[in-house]
Amino acid sequence: MTAPTSLNLPAGVVVKGALAERYDEVLSHDALAFVADLQRRFNETRKRLLVLRKERQKRFDAGETPDFLPETKHIREGDWKVAAIPADLLDRRVEITGPVDRKMIVNALNSGAKVFMADFEDASSPVWANMVEGQINLKDRWAGRIDFTDATSGKAYKLKDKPAVLIIRPRGWHLPERHIEIDGEVASGSLVDFGLYLFHNAKAALAQGSGPYFYLPKLESHLEARLWNDVFVAAQSALGLKTGTIKATVLIETLPAAFEMDEILYELRNHMAGLNCGRWDYIFSFIKKLARNKAFVLPDRSQVVMTKAFLRAYSLLLIKTCHRRGAFAMGGMAAQIPVKNNPDANAAAFAKVKADKEREAGDGHDGTWVAHPDLVPVAMEVFDRLMPQANQLDKLREDVSVGREDLLEVHQGTRTEEGFRENIRVGVQYLEAWLRGRGAVPIYNMMEDAATAEISRAQIWQFVQYGVALEGGAKVDAELFKRCLPEEMARVKSELGAEAYDKGRFPEAIDLFSKLSLAPEFEEFLTVPAYGKLG
Image 1 (cartoon, rainbow, N blue to C red):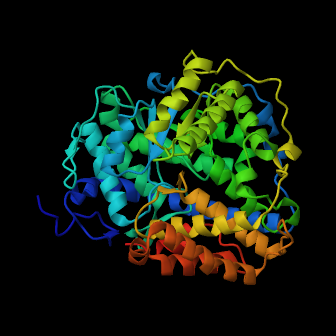
Image 2 (image 1 turned 45 degrees about the vertical axis):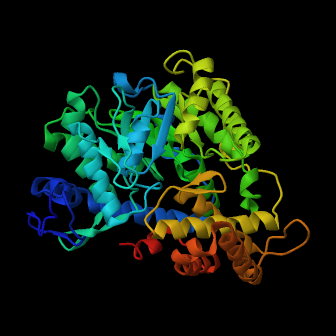
């Protein structure tokens, strides 16, 4: 097959990305017309909601802190439940996540996990080829032709008889797809990812006993959940699908959303499958939303743990809220990966995962996330032992009482120069890999994605802004950052090897990370200014 030289485009649609083999299959006239219709109907609301985010942030910057909404008290106190959940989503005890490249998809579907979340968002760098080829790969999964042989290694990849249930994570409301324009305006990355996948695969998935399932990222309010619900209703109608066919799990990974969990469930109640503790993004959001408030400076990232303070409160509230409404409460990501050639370190990493999953299962979570296939059996053993039934919807946790102050309680701990320096190393290395088109990156035996790079950048920014005193007496300022940066990059170069380092995009990553870390105003997402540097 050869690459198409042009596409049959609907009126008002322009595709600016380069074309390659099979791109015309997913960028078909009818699929793009479907996406364009969604954009025309919902993009103005999307943009208005993003303005509301900025206005709310200004209030936080002025000293306001989040609270439960008085105008939606009747929803929180009401007696309602979400609609019935499909059979293949009733047992979600272990879910694996990762990008949408072909090898990852086959390995994840074969991993033994109950669910695979194919990620167009934080685990994928939104290079045009990644986004389009991801759609081709997922279309092939439902068409029964995802099997392939790796041209480099010669290894054959073949889908097993009972693969994991597939859930798609489109990009968040704030992210554009600059390679597609509709009526002269850049397309919404959310609507492109969602629309193309639904158009091509909804009916095939249903025919095979599953359905069109989605993970929704970065929501900050029930109004943003309402927009997704409106999109679902319109999309199902356009494709002749019954209302409620689409099922969504919402990641609670922003601080404002934690105060609106009931309302988010309510807005999506006909399409709702559950909520998930998106812990890494949640830490980033906590820092970002309260970045101008000196009372909320966190200790080193390694000390911001799920067993304490605001993270403990939000995970327990999520379980209680979901189970009261008949929705699933999913646990967070175990980012550890196997440590090769070091059995002791590997055993320690796996022990951490086991303890984390025991906490989740014991608290009442219905399942959890892992980032690496080797962690599937570790998490599975815990949930099989502590949750022999399909889920824990009957565990209502009426003993839990979480209020505003609990959700804002800061972790106690130390702020160290080593933690500051590690933020530099992790942040720059992740950003450099992202610029090369990789969204899930192993760094220091952890699988890092955009969220962890955001934590690194946000902590540095906040430490610099407030001149935070570190253990040992050093005071953080721009000069300390400028002194540490070249020293840490020299360390990274020695760790990676000079040849690999020099072949990378480190100068660009260092420049961008420095500008964002020292900027007078906090840039909301590092991936937005970085996006313009991608292909």
